[in-house]
Image (cartoon, rainbow, N blue to C red; front, top):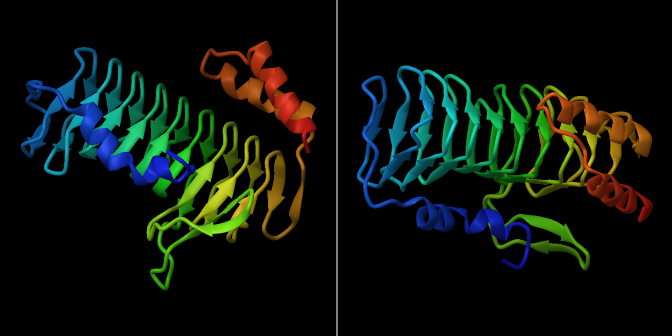
Length: 255
């Protein structure tokens, strides 16, 4: 891995390698398994009726305590982490879902960290979403240019071609998007951002940004940002550690 988008580019291969098991789990009567690649269901997985596991494109591994809602479709290769929740009628294809994350809508070729909230409808494609992010209802990422060209993304040395035709959003930890947020191809969203309003946000949103494409962006006040993070984590019975608080403060002071 050299660039952030390599996490997305190598995801199908990584999932296929890491999710394969020798013997598939028996499929409960209320679910359906299609395909020849392996399917692993941890003993404590909860399945509502009508869940479809399609391993035609690669293996599927569902970890301890995960909950899969009715009529959700899981297309391999795919990893669903411990205590993650897949809401009813959700479609997941080639994704790595982190511990305790909650997802709905359509997720395709994406990495989601711990406790990511993408509960409602909307498309998330070819993207990396770090831990503790929240994507409001209807948040949608574009992952393909209208001219089908290679997508560019900003790095320290300037914007450069990723060599990828499909690439959505790279989002840092603790960032949040309101309902109806739209994110263009090759968008980079820094840590602890709060984005809202309609219209495409810029493809480069710096860390600790607060604002909209219509009203502009200001610096998110550190004390308010930390308070919001603490309230977010408390909802999952977690707390912001002193080490993480110091790390975020130092990151903020870098400007």
